[in-house]
Length: 238
Image (cartoon, rainbow, N blue to C red):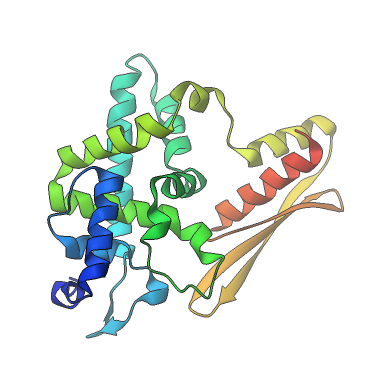
């Protein structure tokens, strides 16, 4: 368990800023402010106490599951005659890392996340994680039904046109592989791990035959490959 007492000691001005931000993002005032402080604390700014490093990673884990369940519930009721494969694919398009990063920017998560500001690149990839952690905090603070209402009313309905989501193909890796197969070209993804202090990142390079195309980056191999594939799609006008 995290040390709520240590998190409760902070500048009242910072507290008021966070309360205002949560009201703007979620539409209600936080009950247990310490949960939201923890949800916005990235590991790059966390400190070890009693052998445990406080950060938003545990809340991110919880929020990921709750967010997925809320979106699954919404889609299940929205599309009563669609099969499991359709529902799984549409949920994935809504809650994938790129989608959540973009969504987090739109709702204002960037103004409250605490991270190592020396790493400007970091903010681009941690916003979605922080949004998931906020979902986890809301769940612990307000319960599942209030959290599901937040997900639907404040995240899905205002920011996702489901008709566009359903008719789009956001799997760039599949697109470029299918294109290569049609053209009779050999394709491969070369992935390397890049260590940056305590954190790590992956880079991916797309090769068509011996020719290098898009290079991508991400905190996971899958994300790096998708980023490289997306850039390749742009280069090839796919």
